[in-house]
Length: 387
Ligand code: GLA
Image (cartoon, rainbow, N blue to C red; front, side, top):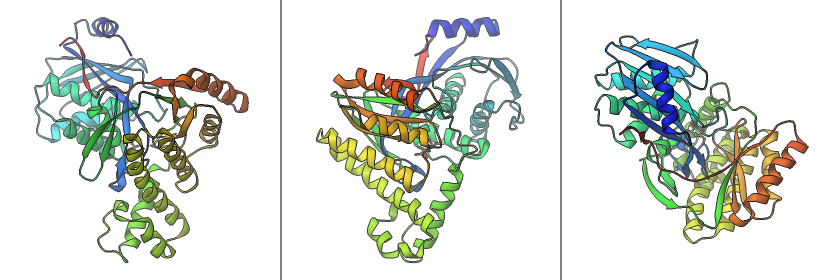
């Protein structure tokens, strides 16, 4: 975690005045339920102890000035007309959220922002959602606006959908806004109801960044969404009550799958089976059955790899190495895919040996270096200091 006095000092050095507040929004790891959120399905993420921080102060004019500590560059824009920035793509997350607040009718003052983050970019751990949620929360506090966690998540998602152009679902923004310490949230992405489930004390969540940069902007993410919509369109001919793949069962796919092109059928099979795995995973965790939960994680990986085609060889290698280690209950690609990170559930007493072996073997068998994070689940967006 980054340290508040340092952020405060950096802001003061940069802007010549103390920040009014500092907020932090966490990145996330998803334990089960991948590519189900935009199909009205179930997900099971946790907010992790890696976060994006926004230090902020008001200005007297109608300008927003943003300094990115990661890129060491400043961007600024006026509140009157907010356009997409080609020069500073990172700033579009900020611009999109500010524009979303203005579109709600909120009156905003100008602001100085300093952004720092220890969520590694392109690692599949939702650095974008963390930035959106932290920005939204900072503006909310700076301008005395009341926004509930769910609303903040929806606003952040809308910024990414309409301004950045990635048709992401609600999972990342939701967990970054509403995460709970020591828990994962089982979220029903149709009605946004959720349940906080305590994480088992006997195991740790181990994230391993493959070093293969993931970017949803230029990946097949939007294409996968379109393929799911195509599956729904065809299946509705047989079952008119189907609004999303959430409403389709494996029995439906058995009965009508022949009507779908094979690739579309495979995509649908992943989503339908993945929704069931989240429900089964919840039952397994409630009864303390880590073996069963881990097996579902691994089945999820195979489904993502073979049916949804969002894995890459380096991620498959990490999963294979993980599963061969003692104490590993299960391992899978986490997040949007096309690179990024794996998540493994590992018995606590084996974690040290597990991380050492994973790093060593991955380097020995491939070209990339792994970055490993044994993470804790923390609470969602909040003030980090100067309250
Ligand atoms: C990205 C998106 C999420 C979700 C995952 C895949 O992280 O932002 O909405 O679709 O991919 O589960």
